[in-house]
Image 1 (cartoon, helix red, strand yellow):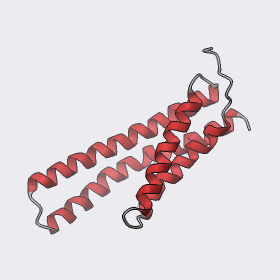
Image 2: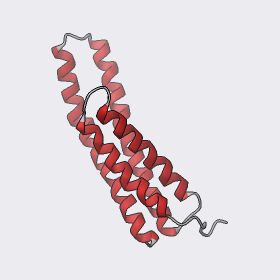
Image 3: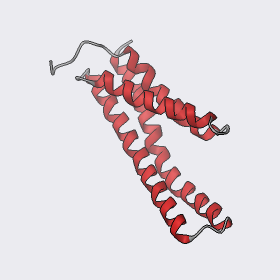
Length: 134
């Protein structure tokens, strides 16, 4: 399989993660705030949890952008791209799998495993021979 095709799968994975981050930010932040207000949680705790939620949303966007950079580098067969795809994909698959089944079934976190597979699987097929930066 050509690196262009593999890069397309990685690009889709990174793009999905980037597109999901604003949804995570806006919809999740509101739902989380409403749930915490319903449990009579103090405003300091609610603010802290929402700041963490915001950080996670930004981190999702940055991971998606990193995936998109990996896709561009994979297409050009640049140095270390295989290791990056395997690292990012493995992390997302492990988090998504663990999160989907522990401590209870949470199908929303399985999204991360699917995105991770879009990055991880092509990473196995990327050329081991390094590109122009030998």
